Length: 213
Length: 251
Image (cartoon, rainbow over all chains, first blue to last red; front, top):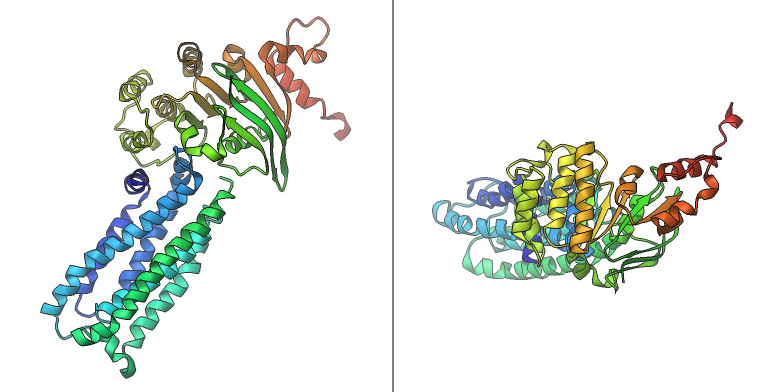
């Protein structure tokens, strides 16, 4: 497994993936729709998948002494690694903004617990569609991306707009008591993310077994 | 002992059928897979390697069912696919650094000696290499993990005559000294006259014959013209392929 990740990072990943991963730091921008961080987290894998098609990455992996389904596993691991790293990178900045930007984010949702919960949900939806659709062919990445980014963007939009309604104001808070109320969203998000990756790997690897390279 | 046994390999595409292909490659031998463009050579090799998902048939490598032992079998196989470049913008040393980690028997000394022998510079990027140099690099990778079976798709196409001869000599050396077995597809049949022990001939997705080279040539004696001494593999291919081709009817 480590060899697969090493291969992904050293040969398969497009430099943009690393840049977009670093963009977790955007939660420090005073007024910004932080949902964009998740959009960047979706764009990174897409560009890498496209780059992989140009570099015959899938051929290379399939010729290594691994099972055919490990080619899918390598990509799933890379997507998880980049998105989780991005969220971890964003954490210290989310804490920092509590101290230096206490007045909140007028553009959309705060970088709070609900925000991270929505992030897991959005990533889960995107990954599930992208991976299962892409590995039906191993090359139609544009179609897979469009199918995946539309629901992911709608998710981002709902998150950003919802917090402007008084009834959902509690979702925009960084007050400890209200963040505790947001905790179930994070828990559901994490569970959904894990399940969606497991399903994505299973379905995508089964489809990829039938793909003719 | 057979290093590779292909039995009843079948794969259907909308406009092409690889039909019930069976052959065996004994240990320490070179088999040439011949056929014209589009005959099914690459599909056969890709089906053997599970890159293409066959509709039927079984592949046994080193006596084991390949599908069920894909990881362990691939440890002992070296593959070169002509015409497919990996990671054009990466340097050879980066690709090697990743590849070596996957193989238990990786031999740095052997790798270095092949890189030197093939005059390959590890700091060069793949896109800076000529077609022949790319094949040589892929061969260097394949040979550095002590592969017992080499599966090569058009390895000599795109190489100059000197490099081609060098590589054929290398094949003969590998077979003689190290007991490696080689299956390679080519449409340059003169390469096979020089080094192959066995020939398998595919035409329109069907295996016409697979036999030891001299027996293979003998079995096509009916194609000989009066007074002709010996048929070459090229004669056999050209005359077999032309026989179903009536040019006059189109005039």
